[in-house]
Image (tube, rainbow, N blue to C red; front, side, top):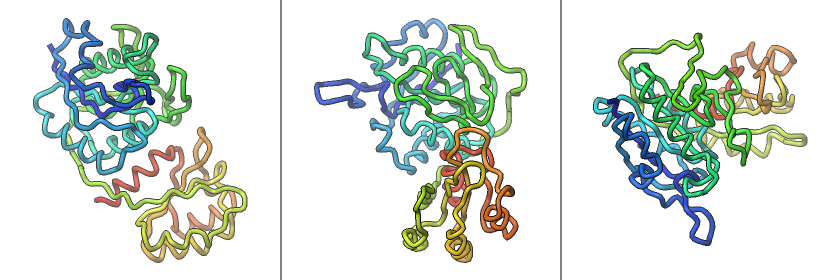
Length: 306
């Protein structure tokens, strides 16, 4: 039987309510007791690396996750990471860039409701994730949620309560899971190359979201504290004209600038308007195109660490 390592980091799935709100206090070994049917299908081991609510996640913990997977890579056929949903898309995007290649799937999942709840999506998401990890013969980082198999660097949390909390907004689903049946899209091929692990991350990346009335003088501090900036523009290419001098200064100082969009779908096209056209012509920024904000942030964090 295939061997799968279940790695618990906390989040809602492994939370319990002791009268003062949810707290991630259910240990990894306890979680195995909620999915006993898998004992007939695969060998499942559990490991706790930290127990946090996902808003408390810091980028250095992505390095801990990578090191955990790397140290156990030869002993298992696949990995399932339990994660809080609030920052899951950041972690899945980061791991997609920090773990390249390989012939073993790394699956990230979570839940909108605790596994202790009578009505919960936690059990289904765990069953689906473990079955996919055991049956997918290639590498890569994936998110499995509510029956959807999605590429890790294309997901976004779009609903706060519904079971269908995540969507792959910039790429089609890899496949779907219906009970024990896994249906993979014919367009996705399994990789089988030597794994490449990077466990370093640069967290000095600033996210600037444009809004009406924003002024560049508010962001003079960025040059003293950050090595990268993600500009979250309006629509396809909306960047205020008065930010050009600030962007030019950042570029001269060697600060990497990546542009993504506040829109969920259809990405960026900086060639459309004068400001974006100038910035790309002068190579002052890199265009994120269909990158989500989460993917843009983690791309800079990983790239700058290299």
